[in-house]
Image 1 (cartoon, rainbow, N blue to C red):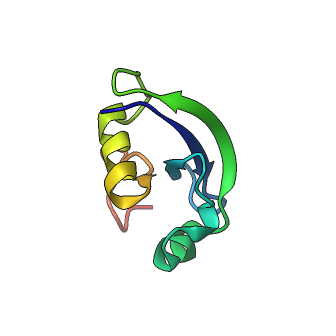
Image 2 (image 1 turned 60 degrees about the vertical axis):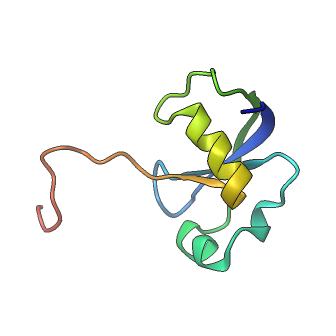
Length: 88
């Protein structure tokens, strides 16, 4: 998979949720349903992403593939073990 320049945006609504897009893409052009959930994207960083690059919580090849096929990659917050819905 070919390297590309990406922009990463964070959600103001949901902690640790990020969306990766091609650097040239306007994040406000993302699907309406995604933007409703995500909120207004806030730029976090820009960098050149290659398949062999190490990322903290996601596989770079998976991100590149999603951007090529879907136009974006949505990184969801991590799931914390031991917690389930309804626990206080």
